[in-house]
Length: 85
Image (cartoon, rainbow, N blue to C red):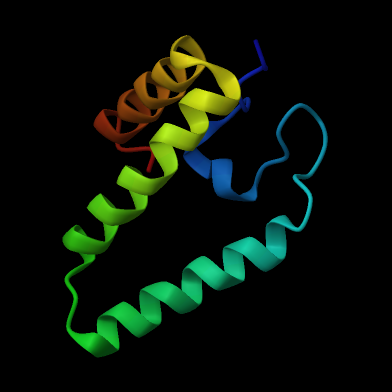
């Protein structure tokens, strides 16, 4: 099982397992552009988040397994409850 990022409060800026994901900056820019385009189209952030999570989670589970995906989400939820995100 892959290691989790050390600090999920800034996971989007962190390297995973000590290495940057291939083309991460490009992918992040595409997501940021999608958010801007959805805003302009009148799609709520909540709807967009549900769509992004719905598309991403099955890929994470297939790639890393359900235990890994569950642990990532658990840690993320803990950081959110703690006000760190």
